[in-house]
Amino acid sequence: MSECNYLYGNYCAEKRVTVLSQMLDFCGIEKDRLRARWVSSAEAPEFVEEINEFIDVLKPLGPSPLKKQTSKDVA
Image (cartoon, rainbow, N blue to C red; front, side, top):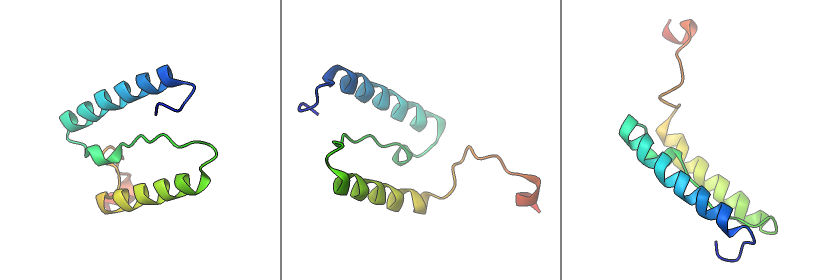
């Protein structure tokens, strides 16, 4: 994080993610559904790897508990 020219913005984002993580936990939503990583625009392979790892974490969690059920989901 210290290599970025926008250090203050990253610091604010990190604080927000921390607070949001606590809020998710309080609401009974898995904290694993939230992730923040700093990847440079020059690091495309690292970005792809990060997204694929996040997908691997999310898949076992299933759909969001906030997703509303539609009438066809109930039937």
